[in-house]
Image (cartoon, rainbow, N blue to C red):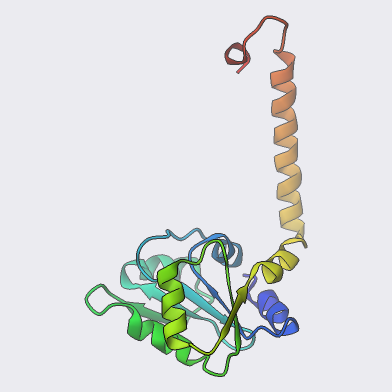
Length: 173
């Protein structure tokens, strides 16, 4: 998990917390693609301390299997709604003044929960925080990139070998 590196970057940029929903950054942090649906599903990541997940009960097994490192999980079901779980998660952030979210993935109803429980915080884009970390690749990531480039190059060579004047794209494919 990349939680520690994100926390260091948040602290360096004087951002108190990062709140993620299922989307590209949660995938980047956990290595697992969670479904984005109409239910509140958040990971609150303070610049220091333990992260807290707000997870629909129907996703509990999926979360615990995919992200066992985040053991503070607040569950909710449709009968009770997510507000109590969200409130408890955000209650650990009452001293926060600046919170980052993923600007292209965070949805209105998620933002409404955040603003309801932390009305005083300044909300900023998480892009600079996340992009600075994504620029640095691990040995495993670099290896995967090299392998993907090798496969793409091999595929292109195969396609180009079939290119002849008068052949259609469909014939070449």
